[in-house]
Amino acid sequence: MKNTRKGYALLALALVLCLCLNIAAAETLINPGDIPQRGLILPMTHADVDMGLETMYVVYPTSLVPELPTLDLYFNDRAAQEAVLAAYTEDELNDPALQQEITTAYYEHTYLVGRIFLFEPDLRDAWEEAGITPAELTGVATAKVMGENDGYVYVSMTMEGMNTVEDAALQQQIDAAAQRTIELFANAEYQPIVFAEGEFSEPMSAFPAFTTTDLNGNTVTEAIFADKELTVVNVWGTYCGPCIDEMDELAAWSASMPENVQLIGLVSDLYDPNDTDTLEMALAICEATGATNYVHLVSGLDFAPLLNTLVGVPTTFFVDSTGAIVGDPIVGANVPGCMAFVEAYLNGN
Image (cartoon, rainbow, N blue to C red; front, top):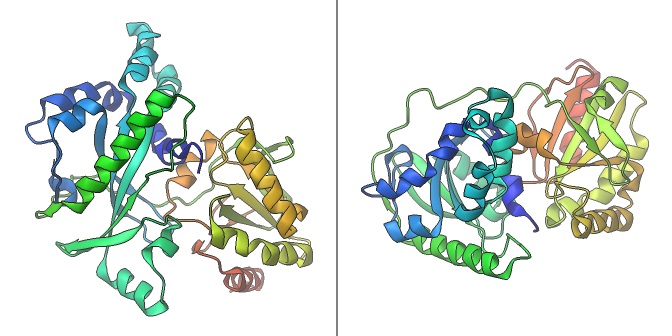
């Protein structure tokens, strides 16, 4: 998976810039691995902080549960981040109109190296009953149950080998951070969870406004939804076997859809049309599966609010002509389930 950092670090657009500017202060933490907000004690040291490791606790409004507590571990290229900030004057750093630009540029140098989801046990029981593994659920091969604590099941994912950069020295640093994250997760201890007041938020009710291109370079905006009563949005990745396996079935369904329904794909790991390797891979997959008969979109920064709700791919959303998300998203490869939802929706059920 190329440029994994962008797919996961898109959550930065929802952060206040001051959080970014205070990262250097992490070196003053008494115990950087003491994370009561997620009930964890990681054997994290000041040396880890000095190497660029950072923990961030977030809550994702996911397609599985409305509010999913999560802990992310990032590697920060501090020199590059400082250069970003140095390029702006003090007045510009405090200008609200520039906050998104600066935050986005800053987090271009941030790489996700690990993630822990906190699921309630009944959801874990439902996976096991259905014979689904955490790796299959999330689409990440390293995903596994790491333990239970304070009423939650902890599912960890490590991202070794998933960040690719051209700078060999930086690549070595990222790989070292990913390996260190494996050690931290393997040796984690638990403590009572203390959620921060007001940290939970409401799930998305509308698809984000966007301007992007399809795989052929044509400009596409959210106006595409107005053309049909219902749009089926299938979020997939070029690295995801279950996504690819269902695309021939999706292509066949697209060809037989009613006139008032359409299918579009959103390539979750293609963030920039200039990423020619991923673009060519996406095009080849569509050609091989027959999925060239429906539109596939590049998932630029405008899709950050949506991508941050994903537990894994494929995930399928249903969007009405006004851009509102209707019904519950379907996680996993389940074309019959998607078809059943569309039929029920059109029949007013």
